[in-house]
Image 1: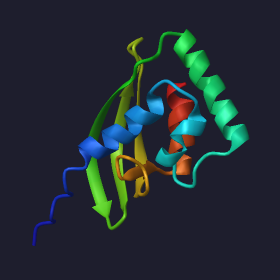
Image 2: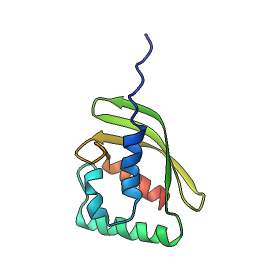
Image 3: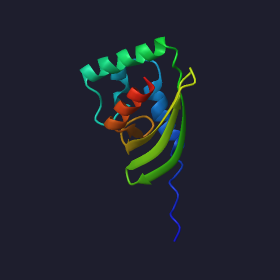
Length: 118
C-alpha cells in the first residue's frame, strides 16, 4: 500500500524559518524555537546574526524538500541560500507548537542551522 504523502507543510515550515532568519532580536523569535531561547543563547544568536549580516549573508532564502510528518513532528531537508550565494542543506526537525506558523524548529536544529549559515 503506498504511503500517504505528508500534508503541504512547506508554507508553514518556510514561514518558521523566515521568522528566525529575519531581522530583530532572537528573544522575540522564541515562539519559533522549541522550548524557547534563554537570555545568553539569545545574546549569542544575536551576535552571530549581526556578524553574518555584516558579511552580507542576509536575506536568506529557503527551499524545503522531502517533508515527512509523524504526528506533531515533521522533518524536512532544508537548503538555506545566503545573499552571498553560499548554501547549506540540513535535515531539520520541526515540532507542532504555539508559534504564528503552528510549527517550531527543534532546539538542536536551530543551533545547527545557525552554525551552518552563520
